[in-house]
Structure formats: structure tokens, C-alpha cells
Image (cartoon, rainbow over all chains, first blue to last red; front, side, top):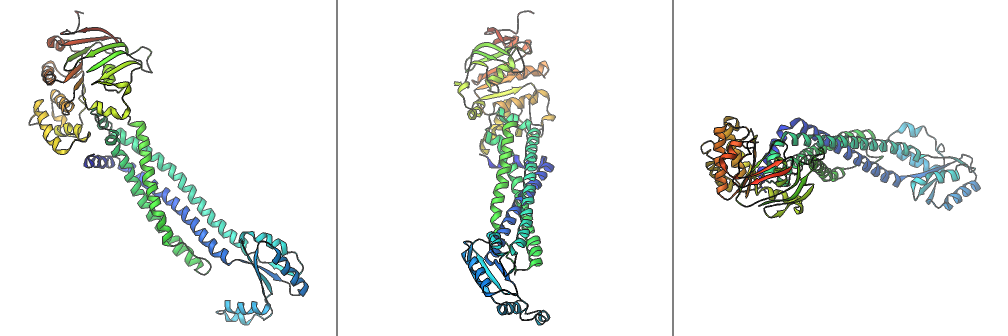
Length: 293
Length: 229
């Protein structure tokens, strides 16, 4: 195998088809970046879920005029639910202390809140936070219950938002991937056509498939590689702009965690491999049709 | 060296067979003219030898190999034993004479020192010494055909196939090309040449196989182009 020969043929091919090659590089980059963003969104949602679900408890707030038998009945009901991990009681005084701690920086707010303004409540920890609805409906209508705090409902909206981004990124990735495949197909076909004299002679003098198709497949693989490189850049940009500067500065680090660079870096080798393999495979498949020996 | 046994080739687009139950045997070292009108099956015959086409029926042996049993990936090895020359030369216009000939060796993976040694030798043989660095469009038709012959012969094939090699050349130049093919034949290479040129066939006095509408109508050693027609 004369590497120098195959490489120089590849360079000639790339130069002749520069505009098509650039198109291939860009579409590969965009589709891989789309895939990467979809993956990162998924990871981000999982990170958030881990964080929030670990903290979620259902709060069952009690009426101002709740009686002791009602309290006990509610507590029994919660204890008997199989979804409940444990229940603890928060009195008005405890609620007030926690409130003071939470809003220590806002002195006016604390000063204007009387000691018995905050309701007493049962804090319920669930085995599976998603089973929230079962618990809520079990105690919601019991006498003595004021309301059951719907923390989960708010979370669902957030998750739906991220799911939406994830799905959109996936759709973009798939559509652009199809475009990329068609472009590679066309580029290779054009390249094969523009070099039909050379390949004709190569076939005639008995060059093997490796020599005839090698330069084209390498061209495809190289375009895929450069495209992947660009995609990695776009992904890093996504992490910096949208996650670090967007989400993190908007919501801060107290209410959730964010995906780190390790997650982003993890996708890099896979995306690169995918880009190179797809481009090379499509090139080879196209050649099977247009460069028969 | 080449054996056709009851070979029929029907192209999908044509009802009439291009080659119809043709049986021919060509020995090692022979010089054979393939004559006949356009469409008589000469080109099909040559394409079948190169395994560019598969016969519809019949069997073909080339260089001791049964082509119907030759797997796809062994076709390149077969073609390395066959040099091919065409009427339209088929040189690469953006490569020099030397590069055109070297190309044939490079694409079959010959090492550089072999290429550097063999190419000047063969260019000398075909009478193009000193013109290595010319581009094809700076050469006359005869010289271009010599480059093509050099390229076909540089790998020392056992068989040289020439499809109307003098078709684009004037008579004087053609004589030169024929001398060259004759010299190549004398090195032991089997030469099969399809041609329309009656003068050449008549003057060479070599074996003549005539095809007519796909049939072998004549096979004559030391033959002439045709009976006075």
C-alpha cells in the first residue's frame, strides 16, 4: 500500500470538490452538534432530577383550627401509604424558625411576619417523588388539611421545557444528518465523475478496490473528521453560553446543579467516531454504485 | 492463453446477441487480428477477456483461469496480466508522459524504486526517450499512442489487447505503431488486436479471426483482411 500515493490522490480530490466538501463538513458539524446538544440536555435534566427529587417532600399544610384527632387521622393516613418513606411534623414555631433562617437577609420581611402566621404542616418524604399525586389525593380532602403544596407540578413544567429542547435538538440532528448523508452521497458521486478517467485507467491496469476507492473513502472520512471537530467546538460553545452563562447565571447554583465539562467531554470521542464512520461508510456505499470494478 | 468455448453474450438492451456461440483458442505468444464490421462483436470479445462483462452462456479461460470461477476481488490480478490499448489513447491530460506510465505502476502498489527504474526502460522501448516530461497535448497522435502502449506494457503483461489502436492515426504513423506491437509480440507477449485497417492486416500476415454479427466466420493463420469485397 503506497500511502503517499493514496494521500496525494485524496488531496487532489478534496481540492477539486472544495465547495461540496465544505458543505459536507458543515452539515456533519451541525448534525453532530444537534445530537450532542440533545444528549447534553438529557444529562442536564437527569442531573436536575437527581438534585430535586432528592430534596422533594410533599408538604401537607394544616388548617388554622385543626383539632388533635384530625391531626392524628392525617398522620395515620400518611404513615399507612406505601409510597411514603417517612413523615415528620413541623409545628408553627419550627416553621417560623426555618422561615427566619431562610430569609435572614430580608429583615423587613421577617419583622412583619408574626410568629403564628405560618401554618403547621406534615413534611412527607416519598420513595418515588413522581408518585406525588397519589399522596396528595389521599389526604387533600381530609378535614383539617388546608392544602397540599404542589411542588412537583412546578417541576414538571421545567422538565417539560428541557424535554422540549432535547426533542427539538434531536429532530434538528436527524434532519440535518439526512441532509449530510445526501450531500456526502452527491459529493462522492461528483468526485467519482470528475475522476472517471483516472479510475477507468486504474481499473484497466488492475488496481485493487483499496487503491481505487481508498482516496474517496478517505476524503469522506477526513470531511467527517473536520465536521466532528467543528461540532465539538459548537458543543463547547453551547456549554459555555447556554449552561454556564445562561442557566447558571439565571438560576444560580442553589436550586439545581448543572452538567460539568466531564459530561461534555464524554460525548467528544463518540461524536468524532460517529462523524468519521458515517462519512466513510456513506462514501464507500456510494462508490459501490458508481465505481464498480 | 485465451480460450472461448461456446460463448454467447446478449446485452439487456439488445435482442440480437453481440457474440453468438463463439469458440476461439489463442495460444501463448500469438499475434491475432480480430476483424469484422462495427457491431460484429470485436469489442464485446475484448471486454469479455478483461472480465468487464460476463458471458450470457459459455466459458472463457484467460491465462489459465476460468473467468466464471474468478471471484470479484481477483479481477484486478487478472487485469495486471493484460495490457490494454485503445483507439482514443486514454491518457491523463494533466500528467506528463512519465507520470502517465508511472501511474499504472503506482496504482498497483509497485515501490517507488521499481517505478523509477522500469518507466524509463519502457519509454525507451517505445521510442519516447527524451520526451518523459512532455504533456500529452504536446505530442502527436502516434506519440500519444506510444505512451498508451508503454503504459499497457510497463507491467510486462502476458497479453496485450489493442482495440483499433491505429484508428485515429495516419497510415505512416500506423506502420510505426504496428512495428512496436510486433516487437512487443516478439518478447513473448500474446497480442490481440481488433482493427478495421485492411492494409495493416494484409501486410502483417498474421492469424486473422473474423466476426460477423457475433459469429466467428473465419479463423485463418497468416490471413488477410477479407476476400476481395
